[in-house]
Length: 508
Ligand SMILES: Nc1nc2c(c(=O)[nH]1)N[C@H]1C(S)=C(S)[C@@H](COP(=O)(O)O)O[C@H]1N2
Ligand SMILES: [Mo]
Image (cartoon, rainbow, N blue to C red):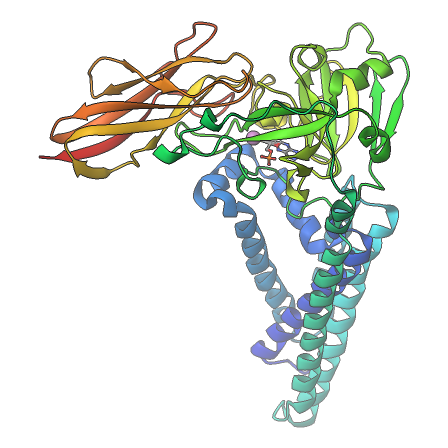
């Protein structure tokens, strides 16, 4: 006799089984590495294979919540697919098992692709696969048995079974989350203690910013430092486990440990980092003092061979980056392997245990966080992550400036008005900043004391603003004599250009 399950029951079986499956994988991932959680691994893979335009679209629409949006979207898709797996199994459990099995296999493949996981990590998606099929089969059996007895009028056994599994899944997922967090890099970071530079950066002068006028502080507190990366869950690398391998076009391969690097004389430098995705007027720019060693020294220990063109760096989570070797080896450039930031070990989200910092280049071609591998190579041999996604091979920072005060669309009394903001031309240095009211003359602004050519400079100027609506513009001139262009270009492929301006209304 064939029994057909009611639609809600069939769908519920699929959803509960899928939830239990995801929870089982997440629990194991606490021990095997966070990225082995099938949910995270599938998310990583989706993000990786998303075409460039979709990624940009996601960033534009969801801003920094793009990853959350990805998880919510994935969750909804999984929910629907799980319900479908149940619905196609009203008569027999086979179609649902096949669907769930197929998803389990996708999870396995997604985890296998991760470069940052050990072989055991495969156990997490395998648990997902086994639990998913097991729970589905079991609940289906219960439901069919009840349906056969009285046409499904009594649902107690099924409901109790389903609720029990759902509760168990919740506990498993939560336990996985809690244990996962407790085993992460944060503990290791706390044990690192202070990193004392042998050559500290000169003290930042008090007049390095115009905070009182509304510019950012010269040094950005770590908690406010802009953050950009492709990682869905932060790579958890403990200092004691960290290794950096230097290989490729070198005379001898070198592998260094954290203890090795930190026992060297450390140098400290103030550097302004910025992102190529920063729009004109955007806030993807911050400044910190970084503590570490000269990257050139490390590479020279390995002995860079003739013919080397790029330093191809890889992070613990497989992100890659290509930096011109000439910039890295240039003694005046100050490229670093950094361990610390603003007097602390690097925060996990900024690359703990170690990252690269190369003044004057956008982050996507220079600032690899959680760096574990440095390959000296040619441009043709290796193509970095963003190079595969429509961004330019080389990304020198473009000379830019931003108005922070007044805020856009301010309405205020006509008369004397302070305009203040920031300007940057890392590794070249800012020569002057000019401000213009509507189509009037460019008026030179007062600059802060320069800390070094690799950091931003703040500026301010007073304008006499007549009543009416106005547009205020700023532009920077760098020390090479280059005048910031007013020509508007988007961020792709090598950084936005144009003048930042704000609208202002002055009342009589
Ligand atoms: N591992 C890793 N490092 C990375 C990235 C990344 O996606 N993964 N993004 C880069 C980009 S695009 C920028 S702008 C800087 C940002 O560094 P921050 O997050 O410390 O500000 O990191 C760079 N390093
Ligand atoms: Mo970036």
